[in-house]
Image 1 (tube, helix red, strand yellow):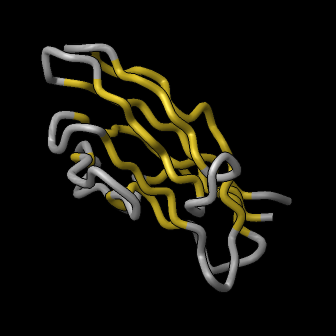
Image 2: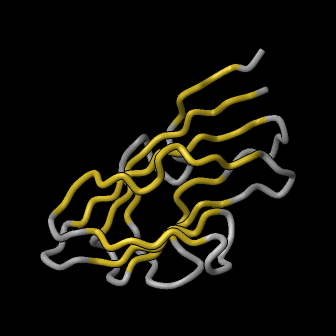
Length: 120
């Protein structure tokens, strides 16, 4: 039987937002998946843009290959909690997959979220 646990993003301190400081690959670490092959992380991410201009955000989902690993979107100015990743999966691996982010402007986009960790 599977077990479920709701946990914070590994890149977060005490559940606080992760500030996207990187402006190019490799991005700011948002979450690192498990090293156990029977663990799946269901990752939910929400972005906030505190600037007065739209900012392009790129999520690197386990790698940096375009278009395979990239999720790109522009976060509207002064918007909050825009859904970026609706429960996408990261499977456990001996070399864990890492979800990273970079933005066209440093330090104005933050990422909030959580992980439903599923062990089968």
